[in-house]
Image 1: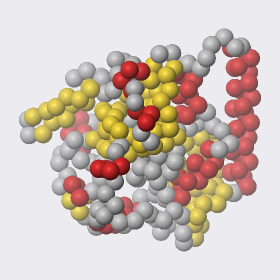
Image 2: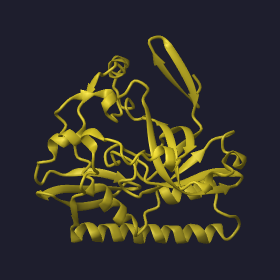
Image 3: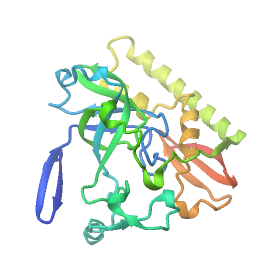
Length: 287
């Protein structure tokens, strides 16, 4: 199987789907990623790969406000210690424990959106902010994704409201969006965030002086803005992500236990200080 392909197998049968692009985003780890799309309006990029990055393939797409993304849960087995452990992890799991049900109650895997499914594929509706063509290559600027950085993209289709939005549908145990928690930030964490912003702005200024005004932004530079470059507005994104409470359901009653979410080039540590309230304690730049 080539690097640009995803192979899904079931009872000896398989289907190979090409990887047409990769998601480039501020979140590089599963912890902190929204559990459903459109809970946090986080902006990210889909970098299309050749030959799928030709502008001709996207003519007409900007007439749609939202798009369907088919993608792969690529971090499921990335840290497995051995081939035996990986093989065990790939075994079919008939039931899962959804966080919305407290992390203890089991339901069928096909009655859930669990990442541990036979195909290892995800499906999300996201907002299409714009289609950018940079150096002849297509970048899709999107918002509201529940994917992390490096997620392989398998397919893209327009979202069609009259057939895809079923307002009378019954959504089972997930009938309403989870209520976000209140999030505060310590003065220390706010100062750390501002110091990192100041350092990055100084570094960007030095780099721009060396580059001059030679060329327009490259693909790598556009991706860097969304994937790594910390900006003042990111504190709102960080707060919104933590307000979704990314902690495991079985640990959500713990007080003053630190959890760390990696966002762009910083580690953000937070804790529960009382019922319904989380607090950002430190913001540390990753070396």
